[in-house]
Image 1 (tube, rainbow, N blue to C red):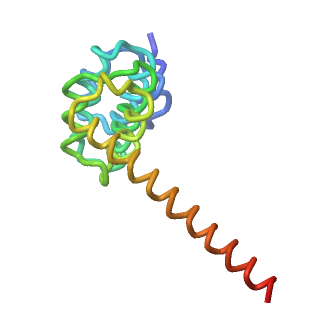
Image 2 (cartoon, rainbow, N blue to C red):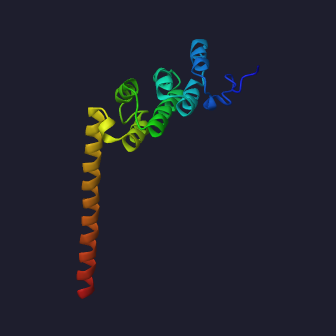
Image 3 (cartoon, rainbow, N blue to C red):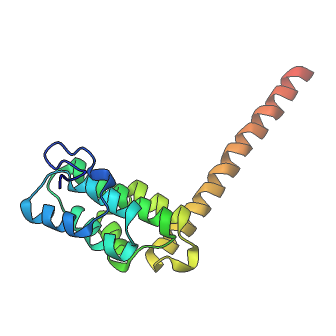
Length: 154
């Protein structure tokens, strides 16, 4: 039986739903593994997909590693949680690295009570920073409006 995905060209691997096939591809050293774990994130349980996503986060190909972090963000969106291994992999990469969007997705879609302490702090810090930035921008608008009113009176 012919496979629905082509490991040589990467066609269809983002729709993969068989963890064993991804494990075999890791053993063969296939290159589109980052794309494949996106398929696992959408089509398998978090527990099945997680170890493979973490493994793909270590791939030498930067683009494929980026896809693995995309898979982690998708897993957070779909499940409302991540495994401890995925949280640790995101923490190791850091918010300014490839994990930026995956961490942002995690903060947006995982309830606060399910976040590990380091992400709870990040969520609190982000909220405070956004509020201060909002106040700063509004104060600038208020000053500009006052200046315009003074200029009209003159």
